[in-house]
Every structure is written in structure tokens, then in C-alpha cells.
Amino acid sequence: MATLSRFPGQTASRWRVFLAIAAAVGGGAVLFYGLSARQPGAAPVVRAPSAPVVRAVVASGRLEPEGEVVRLAAPTAFEATRLEKLLVREGDRVKAGQAVAVLDRRGRYAATVVQARSQVKVAQARLAQVRAGAKGGELAAQRAGIDRLAGELEIARTEWERYAALERDGAISASALDSKRLAMRTLEGQLAQARNALVATAEVRPTDVLEAQAQVEQARSAQARAEADLEVAYVRALADGQVLKIHAWPGEVIGPEGIAEVGRTDRMYAVAEVYETEIGRVRPGQRARITSANGAFAGPLGGAVDQVGRIIAKKDVLNTDPAADIDARVVEVKIRLDPADGRRVSGLTNLQVDVAIEPNRSAKP
Image (cartoon, rainbow, N blue to C red; front, top):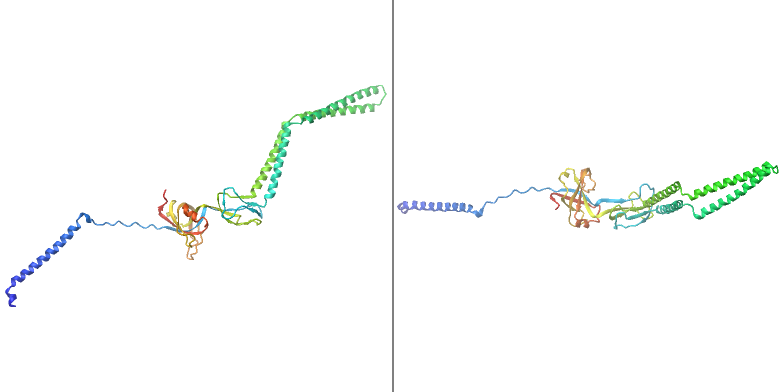
């Protein structure tokens, strides 16, 4: 107690020094941090606002060739048509116009064609004969007949004149003279007829030529009709493609499924059934991603929207989800697969797929 009371001034001075040092240290720290914040290299970081995430348009779909699958069948006018011969197998490539099958009516139609062609040849020969006129030998024979009749007529006329003189002298009866007159008149008629026939034979009349030409045209029309009937006996491919499925075999009656199904599998499409509430976000050229829920192919397929349908209808693709809205109204959107991906699934026509169309991505020009 005696010691503290002896130095009260020294104790107060020490406290003042301590407070001054603390204030100096605190001010320096504040000054240091303030200066460092104003240095050029330490500019404040401005974060850009994040872009909104664009949701993809998802839909169920199926794979199919370009132009859909074409079903080849016999003409509907035929009843109970049988298949005579099948010219292709499943998986074969066919060209437009190539014969795929032959119907059992081919034999009958082929015989009709042969007969019609023969009739054309007969009519053409008749026309050539009319244009050429009569043969020289025929004309000579007719002229010889005319000369013979003229000689007989001269004899008959002489006989009639002699009988007329005898009848005037009363040597013969009138009936005997009449018989000679009748014989002379008969020969005169025959001679006139023979001369007219010679003129008609030697002359080529335009009416005869026209009649022969009409017969030729009629025969040609019958031939064309027979050939058209024969062509119907062949079932041909309508376009280039691949035989996907055969439904009828030789000897069988062709049913409602037809003979075969053909598709252009070198150009594959995914047909997506987009809900009508989402179709406004879909445009041609947008990229799409196609996957298989059952693993029918590995990895996703790529493609671009090629065509947006114009008709709203009910869903066609079967959905195994019991909670799915099977009565939903959808629009078909055709997506052309990238060539490499199309080749991967060329043998999977009608496969059910899942489609995701990306509205913010378009195909490269």
C-alpha cells in the first residue's frame, strides 16, 4: 500500500501509453484493408444471372421408313385370288416397278394375249391385200372367162338369127325361137356381170381400205386390253425399298394383309406423338434425341424434326404405363434420323421409342 501511494502518477501514464498503442494498431489495420480493396487487380466479381433451363418436349414414338410401310396386295376387283409365284424374300431390296409376285390368273391372260396378237396379224395381212389389189393371175382368169362368154354369146346370137328366119318361113314354131332368144339374153347378162366383176377386182376402192384399217385398229385394241389384263397378274413394287414382311405364299389365297410389306429402310424416321399442349414449341429443324426403353439398340439416336403434322388425333403408340392418358390428343411429328443412326435401326420398323425434342437446338445448316 505504501509503494502504490508513493507513485500514483506513473501508473496513470502507463495506462495512457497502452491505450495509444492499441488505437494505432487498430487504425493501421483498417487503413491496410481499405487500401488493398482499392487496388486495380482486385476488382469486385460480378456474377451474370444464370440462363433459364429450356425443358425438352418429350413424347412416345415409333420407328418407320420414309413414306411409311407400303402393303402390296392383289387388285380388289379379284375375288379369292391365289398367289402363283413369289419372286422375293424378306430382307430383299427391290426397285420401283420390279415384279414381286405373280397371281394365278397369269396363264389365262397370257393365252388371251397370244390370241389377240394373232388377230392383229390377220387384220394387217387383210389390209395389205386390199391395198395391193387383185393378183395378176386372178385378173387373167377373169378376162379369159369374159372372152369365153363373149364367144358363146356370138354363137347364141347367130343361132337366134337363124331360128328367126325359119320362124318367118313357118318352118319352126314360135316357142323354138323363144328358147333361142332366152339363151342369148342369159349369155348377155353373164357377160355383163363378168365384166363388172373384172372392173371391181382390178380397182382398189378407198372404202375397202378404210374397212380393212378399222379391222386392224379393232384387233390392236383387243391386244392392248389383253396385255393390260396380263399386267394385272403381276404385283410390282411401287418404289425402291426393302421387303419387311411376307404375308402370303404360293398356293395360298391372298388375305386382307396382302402379299408383302415394303419400306424405304435406307431413310429411317422416328414418328413422335407430341401432346397438343406442347406442339407449339416444336419447329422443323430442331434436334431430337431418340432412345429405347427396352434396350432394342445401344445408346441414343440423333435426328432433326423434318415435318410437323397438321391433324390432331388420339395416341396411336401403345404405352405400357397404366397411368398414361391413352385418350390424349397428339400431333405426329416426323424426325429424320441421322444417316449413321438410321442404318443402325433399319431393321427395327415399328419399334416403340422415347423421343426428346430440344427446342433450343437446331440442326446445323
